[in-house]
Length: 256
Image 1 (cartoon, rainbow, N blue to C red):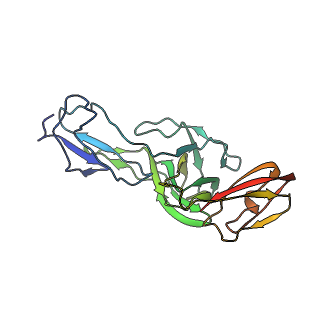
Image 2: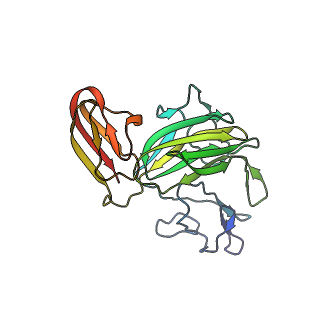
Image 3: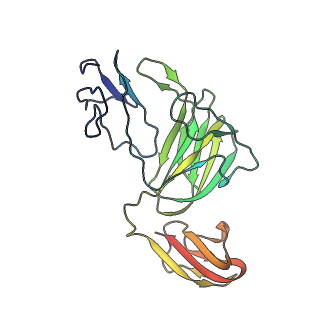
């Protein structure tokens, strides 16, 4: 396709950084290069041209990214069962979905500095209200179609990023409002460039013992125990932890 007729649109917006079209892949050059897009959001690249042909697409994946589909045992679904999901258009995020009725809530606890909620846009979709550590951080409508350059409205899976967050354990709750929300899962990220802000506490304890942190963590820390110790989410805060279990052991507490 000639440069005069070729257009590149990212999320519906025309990108002016267009180079000469190429007939084959060249790892040192490209017709279009873009970056610094919002982390965790879905992005759609459209190649517009009467005889345009897509040769290859390369993209970077964020390191320390983890997919937690809605069928993962990490989710607390309240007895609800995910159903199969087949992607019709877009980039599939897993093969299962949960139709969350309005007013209902699901939850997951995980370590991260950034998360990305994956859901399905549909005409009858409600709002996904996301709380992290009991604070509302996102109210995302799930009833918005994507309009292509040709004017076609497409209903597809979508993603929305949330962050940055202090490193540690986060309780994420998703509630459907004003209609059902089809949840596919979420991505978790550790976006720290280094660990200069990381705090690690190590020691030994007995069941029933409470360890109070001299300086509170920014959020509930990640706790690992060895031996007879155990711990519960309800007994762990940014300020202290109370251990349970059947006997003494050692612990490692990680956070910021």
